[in-house]
Image 1 (tube, helix red, strand yellow):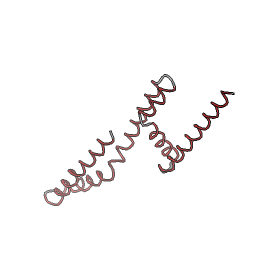
Image 2 (tube, helix red, strand yellow):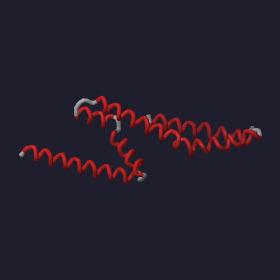
Image 3 (spheres, one colour):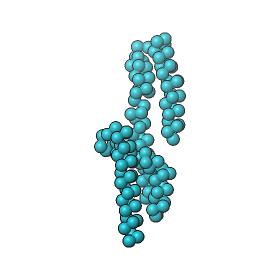
Image 4 (cartoon, one colour):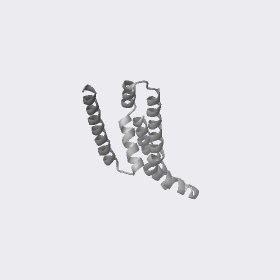
Length: 128
């Protein structure tokens, strides 16, 4: 999905930006100036501001549906891995706490390490 969206952005950049600049310089009437100036600027700087939140919402929706339909722990783990669960959780940590993504990655890794240690401790306690 991301590949298609990036290709759309690149294709739009290769088609929309040169066309609008060419039209602005050579054929545009005075009433078209604003649109022809704003269109390339939006395509370069505003596209991801509009599309990014929609992608994030779609990814979260997919993983939640997969987790809801999972029956046991193995199916939950499989759904989590299949639907980019790690990336969704890192994005949520960064968004909710207003942190840069690299800090969210570090926090995620620490949480996973602590949970792995807690799981190992529980397994050891269960054997006693």
